[in-house]
Structure formats: C-alpha cells, structure tokens
View 1 (cartoon, rainbow, N blue to C red):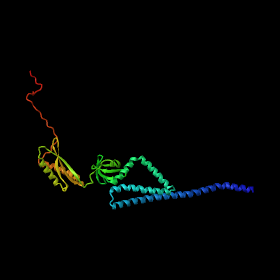
View 2 (tube, rainbow, N blue to C red):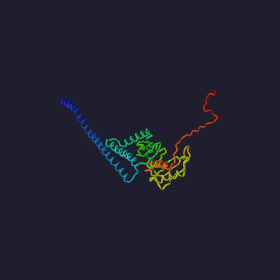
View 3 (tube, rainbow, N blue to C red):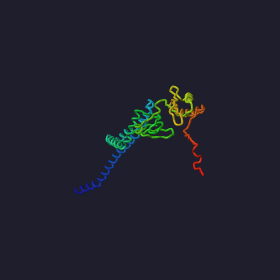
View 4 (cartoon, rainbow, N blue to C red):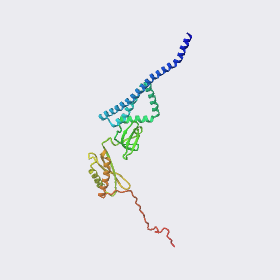
Length: 300
C-alpha cells in the first residue's frame, strides 16, 4: 500500500507541471482571443467611425451650402464638428478595449482643462473667432483694413483669420487681436467714395478747373450718376490750390475707376492749359547801389 502511494505521489509530481502548463496555455488562448478580438473590434470601430465622421461632416456642409449658410460660418463650424464627432468615436473605441469610458471622458476633460490653462491666448483667439462669426464685423470675401494690414478675407479659422493683400501676400491675423482692434470694412456698402486730390496754380481760374473736372466725372461710365459728384477747394497750400474731387463707384470697380480718373484728370487739365504746380522755392537777391561790387577791393 505504501508503495502504491509513493507511485501516485510520483505521478502527481510529474504530471502537475504539465497540468499547470496546460491551464496556463488555455488561459493564454482564452485571454488572447478576447484581447485580440477587443483590439480588432476597437480598430474596426475607429476606422468605420472616422469614415462615417467624414461622410457626416461633408453631408452637413452640403446642407449648409444648400441653405445658403454664410461661408464664414461654414469654414468655422466644419472643423469643430469634425473634432467633436471624432472625440465621440474615440469614446466608443475606449469602451471596446474594456476601459471605463466615463473615466476616459473625465481624463480627457482634465487634459483639456490643463491644455486650456496653458494656452489661454489660443482660447482667447477661439472665443474671438466665435464672436466674429456671431456679430459679423466682416465675412469671407470682404476687403478689410486692421492694424496696418489690408486685404480680402480668405478664411476665418478657429484661431486666426487669413487675408490676401493686393500684392499677392497672405497675412494671418489672430482673431483676438483682430476683434479687439478697429476694423475698417470696405465691402459692407455696395458703393465706395473715390477721392482724387489735385492741385492747380493760384493763377488758374477755379471755375474753369471745376467745370473741366466735373466733365471728367460725367464722362466716366464707372462713376455712379445717382450719387453726388463734388469738385471744391480743399485747402490753400504753399504752392497750389488743392481741389477735392469726390464721386462714388461700386466696390468691385474701385481700383479700375481710380486709375481711369487720375489719368483722365491729368489729360483734361493739360488740354485746357490748367497747370498742376509742384513745390518750389523762389530766391530774390537785392543789389543795393551803395554796396561794393567787389567786397575786398584794394582801395590803394
């Protein structure tokens, strides 16, 4: 009996490691399949979710275009919606991996708060971007001047506004600085006043010059006939009488009319013998009879 017990004990000693190995292998296979399926499921959720997000954002953008939503609002909202939808997809992916989704959201909120505190300037620009969209001091396509920069608004983004200058330059302005500083918008009104300042000589006839300049305005097709045309004395300068020539043209025709009128004014004044003086200095030398012609003449 004792010998049988010894044999059984020996068998247990030999077979136990194999049983443990078999159990461990079974556990690896079970857990591995679960983890593998979780990874595959999370990856599929990520890919499909991002694909659906892209399609949904494009669909929303098309609906906004169909409803004639302003381009500024579309360019501002589209990236926000894209980020929001992708964050929702990431929440589902975390759940597929077996983690606590609510904890992930809380952690994401904490990270967002920390990043927000570190990037207060960016948050200020983001808030200013929302205010620009809401109050609309300008929109995409408008010609604006701010902080010494001027050009047509190309886009209004989350943190900045991009304008294109007449020289072909691209200027990026932070929304915060842009919203908190004066903005001149030349595109809100359909018509814009065009100023031509020209000087004539003090010896010229003002009434004749006024008639000639009014004729120039009447002949130009880009000048709006329904609004006032003005030719008056602006100031008495050192070398000339400066005249203010004022008229109104459409925003889209402004620069074309600008070049045409300046050229036409020069030709019209030349044709009518009206001079355009330039600054000059006259020197008068008095020759007194008692003064010697040769200052150091020898009197001997």
